[in-house]
Image (cartoon, rainbow, N blue to C red; front, side, top):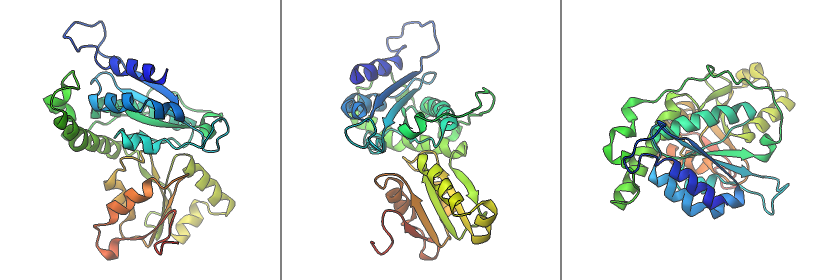
Length: 294
């Protein structure tokens, strides 16, 4: 079922493939699979993402992850799968962001010509919340200077052709376009604490909510965070991590903590981004391991 569903959604982006007229400007698709379904549909999802999306279509791939294995054989973390097939992935921290990131994911998919992954964590999806569904509450900025649609090769209707060129477009044009979309729409931002922090924390998804709860239990509110020089950088898209906003936040601070569930996912990317910074601007980075390897 997972492969058949993904193949059908892949086809939804090819409504004009044979040059025939259509009653619709485009079709958007949403695919869902629990983590084992994400794994088994990997070949289709990889090819569909590389094949691209329609400018008036767009695709969301929802991954049902279960970190506590409440209804799964094993705990699951699908972010690594999305990185493996080179599909940008958004990680909402609550029900409101499931809606908001879903809408941004579709818009980013249309803009960048890639599918957008969305982590649907069991703890979040089993929750209840009062949210805003006002269609005017969000705005969508597509930075035209990074618009991949200007490249005619990207708009071809078939995946097949020059396969190496498909790979180049994916890595050199479309993935950077997804990062540019996140930057233009300020999806990553300083969500809590000091304006000029001494200690920074980077978090995404449910881990951000857990972090805020932990700080609350410690008695660290906004005022206290500003006093001690603490701030949280909230990441919407943990892969590919947008480097400009992160650099603006982290350069020059003393220590950067990376708080994330399960395996380290953002930590390695952050270290890669910071690798070229001059020593005085590069913070100590603490994640699953300390700078001394502990």
